[in-house]
Length: 117
Image (tube, rainbow, N blue to C red; front, side, top):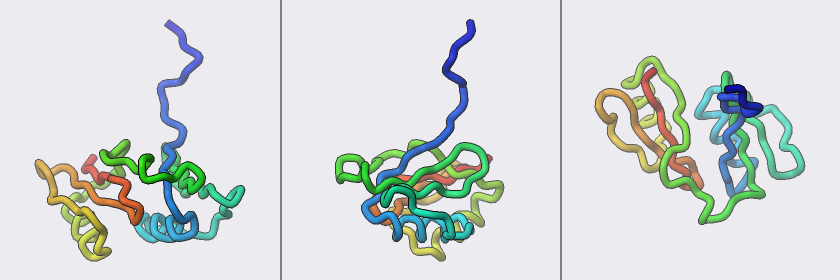
């Protein structure tokens, strides 16, 4: 059966309260330059491989904060990634679960995940 809807993810939107602060935090976390343009005063497209991430302050509200991860960042070395997050003093850091993944929070409280792939 053919479908005009492709079986691929284009972009994930993350609600953030302050676009510049979020841009700087996410770029620092991912080790990428924060030199892209904030578009329309509320959108920042993170430079990603694969599916994209768009930070958007226009959609932010306390109700829009993600309480469970909607995606995960990949890693080949879960222990190294965990130590990196400890060094960054991220909020809401869980322990490594099943030697495979852990969760943490961005500055707005959105729940994020790193998973060994």
